[in-house]
Length: 322
Image 1: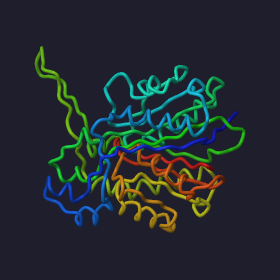
Image 2: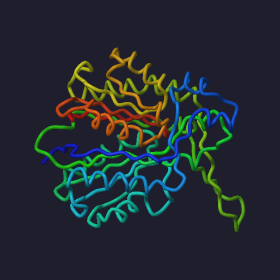
Image 3: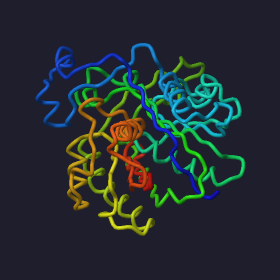
Image 4: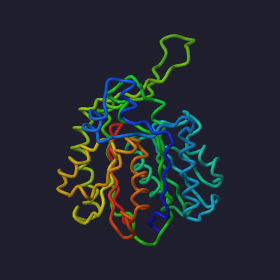
């Protein structure tokens, strides 16, 4: 077996919904200001479930929908920038919560590109005889690292999780991929910094909240995401016109429209759900994928490009035949 296929998709979001009007009670903003600049209308915020709880809920859905026993799962990768803790990994917690005792489990930290990075790593491991079924999940509780007094970031983010269950396949489903990192731009998106103490003994360090240079990230995304998609398509030896759906990280509706324009592709190929969930970082693409599959927007045999971009800074694109 040299390839894999997606056998099930799933997503979970917290029940609590925070609208733009709700945020206007906390800070100097408005529904019109947020919608016109981002496309976001509301977001889901967790008040009880941590990142591993949301991821485990997705994992249980994946098992239920696929009929795959938990003990048959060989690999669990969770992409997140808001883990429960430094250690244990979120994936290890998920493994325990869903009873997948046979699975190797670890996290990937590539922020909003994390799901594509995790798919790429899972793809490589599924080529090895010991791995037949892999669970790849993007999960975030970004609300716990947001400064809710910072209008420039607080209006953007939400919580949620999504994922896929992959199984080895004789058919060719992975068509092309592209990963790129831009460490010199690492200061443009930062969260959870823990500086070294200047004295000994030192108090326990406090994590820094999320900060972002919005202008720099917008410029980066609108230039580097189209470039990544083109490189992945070239490796897949397909024209962009052959791609049926482009599932982009849901960071900003304006970014998605700009990427579509730069690729000379109709916006109808770019499904958008940022209005409902906001930016859920590593969870945004798998949530969107699960919704598109459930609604019949994406069907078997169609070509799908998933593209992420974010902290690192990073980009990642993977093109598959669903």
